[in-house]
Image 1 (cartoon, helix red, strand yellow):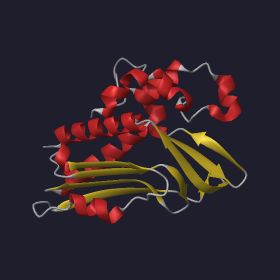
Image 2 (cartoon, helix red, strand yellow):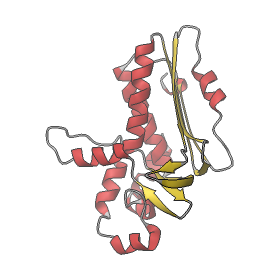
Image 3 (cartoon, rainbow, N blue to C red):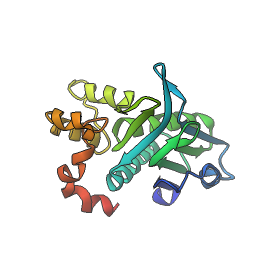
Image 4 (tube, rainbow, N blue to C red):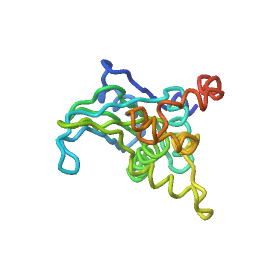
Length: 208
């Protein structure tokens, strides 16, 4: 069963990622490769000193989206075990916010799938990032999300997030600039109204 070979965790602040745990999960005697990606907080951006990152998420749908991405990756590559974890709350400089580990018989499958998975996660999963600087803070959009959003209007691409979450919510509340100016808008303009806009999907999300 694919679900038995996939571990997904979205962790609250105070419950840090256990990288060794995820590597051990994907380790298998029949696999000759383990590919990993560790996303860590760097100390600067565009000349500004970064103090920490802060993450928020619509957890049930985020888990559902990551499962969908993992399922797609299994159809594209010959993979064995997959582990994906994301930290919520404060993530200080040099600490890990997201970790992906994938095992496969041959390295090409694991390497290619690892890149695909982290790119898709950043493009479509409803997890939002705030960068906190020494002199201010701002919600930031991932470059992968911005690229995916721009491609949605192109018929030749037709790309969409695993559950359409980030792009869809952004489009539905694009006019709420006043609320954004009061600091209530997320990186894709959605955080404050996700629960209201997609409440009907909560039951389905929680059953997956």
